[in-house]
Length: 461
View 1 (cartoon, rainbow, N blue to C red):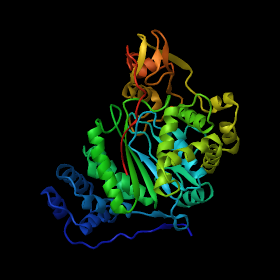
View 2 (view 1 turned 180 degrees about the vertical axis):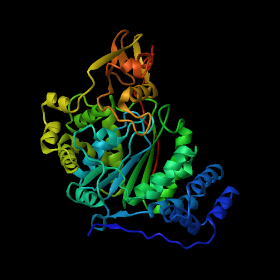
View 3 (view 1 turned 90 degrees about the vertical axis):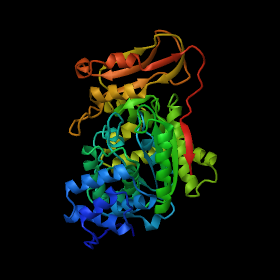
């Protein structure tokens, strides 16, 4: 029977909290029981905010070994409840991305994997900086609930096969606490802390296989391929130590994924792929099929990545992924009427549900040639500043703000030809005076032909 496992905290002390901080400050390796003591102290009152800030800075400066990161990850994972899927052993999978512009891969991927009879308990996040959040995008569908009880998660995965939801208050409270302190102590960009945060969340899900997408580029957390490789190697090593079969993709994030950037507009693009409509984004399709196909290989449901890709692709062609998406969103609060309309063939009704802002601005090419680059950082900033993202955590998102690209890397383009459309409100110039300048300068055109974009830089499996 599926259950939620409860983990007991311990008050077994071996040293004072200041002694542990001093040990790490001086460059020594913390033992597993010492790390467990520190994390347990977050909930039992032994560890105060000042202790956390000091320990985080010590880790930031001194770093952590593989064993320390693994121990930290497990202690964070065990700080709350965990999901358990004994009756689905061999079929529980997930994917995590470090975030990018237009990154909507999870939205069609989860139902496609469920259509392959896998179980996908996908814990997702909100927008961070200019990168959009999967949960924010899903909430552009009226009624969609991202906060589920543990009992509802179990029901959703058991009956539908997939769900995309936020981390409940009972799951991994240590990660929420540590991240909040990291955010205000300048200790966010540290590989040990990034790895433990990501993998503690994923290991709660009791996975058989995991795909990690580590992005690099102007609009990614990691700016260079070399930085992304270092993080991916740490994620891969620690995942293996935790017993999770894992594959890490290192992918380019200088250019937006797919044609659309925003919230409602990215849901529409995801649905178009699941309907396998003519003109859907091949860029998005290939990334979804690659990562989903890899998960099928990892759990021995496909012999080769080529076979895995085609199994995933077939769920879009035959409509089974769309059917699972329909079931998933109903299971998470969308009314059957709206869900029926979203997966139906009346595009005008879909447009009325996933409304876009009513002021359209066209971006025009200044010269003829071939599309060489599209600056995802500039476009992501425009969407964020016009209300499609958050400048502070309390901001309410305007789901209607978005950008639709009309061209991709390598496409021919003529001078004065539109290459993108911005959907904004009347207050765009007030919200972000540079929006039109940034929009028109986000395109780079080459006078000579340009090869199509190669997203995947490296794979660690």
